[in-house]
Every structure is written in structure tokens, then in C-alpha cells.
Image (cartoon, rainbow, N blue to C red; front, side, top):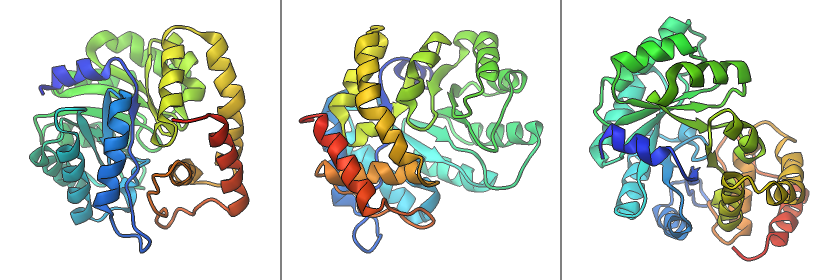
Length: 303
């Protein structure tokens, strides 16, 4: 798949980040991961991001990362393209990027670099070096310490033909509008705020109709129903699912930092596809929170 072919794939449909399965001891569980991917694939996600944020990229050792990406690529070959999360320092990100390309990933999601603050020009140099280290398509994730503006993204687009996507995790509407208007069809644009469904209608109005769904990990039918309702401007269905599920879901998710991942792992367990515990520094849901989530999922019916 060429970068431009990947761009076309990412320009429509629902995207998602599979959880990374751990066993009771916190070790990568490839059998559980395969079972998860085989369960989710038929529901119709356009592409899956292996070892992304919801997949706890930040907690994986290098050898585990290779196992996760290889397992995802091998399991989903011929059914759904796999993009690999990459991040960390520039040299680390390049190593991950080249490993993912070697293992057959169709593209990369470039997560924000490590803790240190950096100038816009420094962040742009980081993105450019990662892009030029591989031939597959790259999607840059504007979030946290990665806050590229429209001018620098335009320069990167000129210098890096394989930079084919922009994912927004900032929620800065002015910045998003300026990027969308300036770059036009040069990029595929993805909504990437946590629990993206809540923002999906607003982002569609901005010219960003595609987003990545975390809840696809445990209520895939509902996630797809919601996406189709957004695509058809079915405001009644969108409003009902937001009221019945997403707003009470957010009430649980917002109780602690890091719950954006923890609540998805809890949901997967409730749905019969236990991905094991989250790794430190994240913490799992408390028992009463788990029970409230279970009631919400049960109300969504069979998936």
C-alpha cells in the first residue's frame, strides 16, 4: 500500500485502536490479542492502529512492541490495514518506525515526542526525520507537546511526501480550521480527542468527518451505528446514543487521569474480551465504577 493509497483509506470510515492484551502478570498476551483482532475485524473499521495510545504504546518495551505489531499485521493481513504507533525521542521513534515498516505495517501514527518542551521548529524537525526514515505513510498526532501550526505543517507536507495524515487531539478549533483551510486535500484529517464521538458532529462540520473510536473495543456495533448516524446527519440517533451512553460514560472516565485507557480495558472485560490490567502508571477502575460501566454496556444490548 502506497502512502497515497493509505491516505485514501483513512479519508472515510471508522478507525480504532485495539487494546494491547496483558495477562494477569502484566505480560503481553498474544493469544488474547489475536482473539480481540479477529472479533473486531468483521465490524468494518477502515483501519486499526496497533500499539497506539489506547494500546498503551507508552508502557511497551521494544521487544514487546515488535511482538504486538507482528501479531496485528499477521492476524489482519487481507482484512484491515494496520498502522503502528511510534513515539518517544526522535531516534527511538525512528527505530520503532523502521521496525514497524519491516514487520509489514501499512503506515504509522506518530505520537507526541517525550516529556521535554520544544519549539515548533524542533517538533517539525522531529516529524521530518521520522518521515524520511521510512517509505510508508505517516499520520502526525497534534496533541500535548506536539502543537504544529498550519505553516509548519505545510512546509512538512512539501518536504515529506509520505506525511499523508493529520490527527487532532488538541481541540483547538481555530487551529483546526486554519490547518484544514490551508492544507486542503493534502492530508487525510482525523479527529483524535479522547472519546471522539462526543466531538464527531462538530468536527464533521469543520471538514473532519473521520475519527478514531476507543469504545469500538467493547461495543463495536454501537460504535459503528453511531458513526453511520454521524455520516448520515441522523441527529436523533446521535443525540440518543450520546444521552444514553456517552455522557454517563464520560462521568466515569473523567474521575481520574488515565481513565481514558482504563475504562476501555474495563469495557473489554465486561464484554467478554478481557485484555488484562493496565500497566503503571495507569490504574484500573474501582469496583463501583466497573459496575456502573457494566450497566451502561448491558443497556446497549448484544454486540
